[in-house]
Every structure is written in structure tokens, then in C-alpha cells.
Image (cartoon, rainbow, N blue to C red; front, side, top):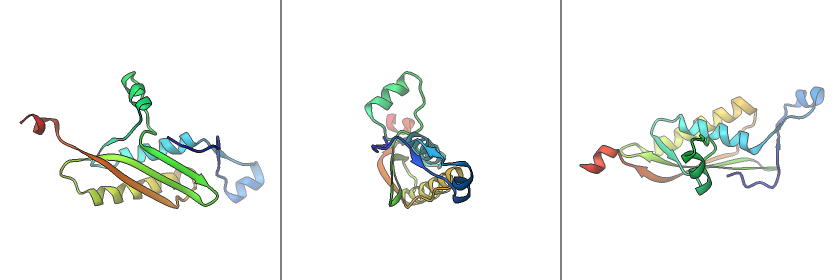
Length: 133
């Protein structure tokens, strides 16, 4: 879901850039990092995806970047996460935990400090056994 015209992003530590060159990250790499970090949070039921990601999952392909929008420009890295949560869970607590986990994972894996991590709760998932009762 990265809607950037750029095909890659630069992320290089000052010393590394001077000595070795630059490191480029494809937007999909950031999407996967964010998607996995979000899915690790207890209480997250599902990530929102597009029709294409739904078809890919039906064919057995795991789409880790589903429900993630990345905007990486001169102003910094801006992340939007779209997910649903389990019924009965504290939405503000889950949203804060997503923000914390995403920010930490992105920084640990890329040395990029996100400017914003915006969490959009798109639904509540009920337990399947409760729906039938």
C-alpha cells in the first residue's frame, strides 16, 4: 500500500555513508516491518487490506504489509496502520502499544526514527463462538 512515486528510500548512518556508500530500503521492506510489528501486539485481530491482498492470501501467500501506508519524504517517515481489534479489548491501550512496537521495530531494524505512527482502528472482531450463540 505504499503510495510513493520513489522506488526506494535512503537510510544511511553518517559514518556508513561516508565510508561505504548509501543504503536504500524499498518501501515494501518498511511495510513488512510495520505489519509484523503490528501483528505482534496482543489484541490486534486483523490488518485491513485491499482486494489484491485478499486474493493473494486466498492463494496461500502471506502478505505482511497489509494495512500499512508509508509516506517517506524530506519531512521524515510517516506511518499509517489500519487494523481491527478483538472485542472486549481496550482500544486506546492497543493503539498505544502498536505505536510503541512499530516505532521501536522500525528504529531497531533501519535506524530511522518515524515522525508519526498513526493507528486507524477499522473494526472490532467478535469471537466466532459468541456470534452463533
